Image 1: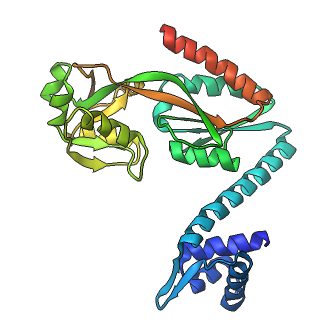
Image 2: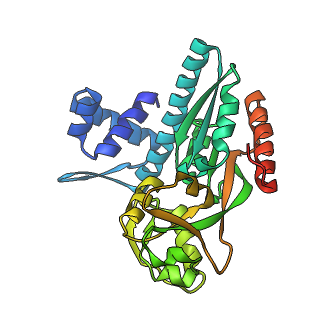
Length: 300
């Protein structure tokens, strides 16, 4: 099996049409069909079901697609890292993050790292599950998210728990008090991010469900800024991490939840069992300082 087999397979799996895949790869269709057949013969697995209107992945094909993408992502990351190191003579250190964690102290960590002339810092906005896959493929070196993910190749560390607050339309009567969970449950909810879990939206809605409260999700959006825009448009409320109040968004009031203290973790994800290099040791040192600042109420 050669790398071109993986590239051909991924193209066909994404297009589910041999003609379109061949055009995308700039090759003729008959050679592509032969390459896919050879791959199936080598694997001794049927990857596609041939249908009149195109192709459909088998269960084996779906699994192989995930593995092939991981291999190609790791290869691309290795190539890019090699080029950057050769060109810049720097160590490339890649960080994955969910946007909500960058309203706290993590930008300070990035600034500290960028002062090191031997480091090239690369940032990738990724959901926590995507961070786990990116760690395994070598695309990133550390990730910062909100959700616990069970994976034997990745270890997660809870840095601290951040309070959750309610973002409400500025004209809403609940801004005059600290609303209870039951009161918030009567207001339509803007959830983020959209898409399959586990994610922040699942955690936020789960806080209500575990208390026997039902919430009406009026809209799911992909990012925090859009969620706040909808709140400002009087569509509903959103639960957000405490540090988000620094945005001071026009038309939005941030208020604490009155009846109990709600928190959400900030989680660092790393490859399990990997000996930290100099860059990672520096990151760990800075993180320890930032966590201490957070826990003791001191901020840089």
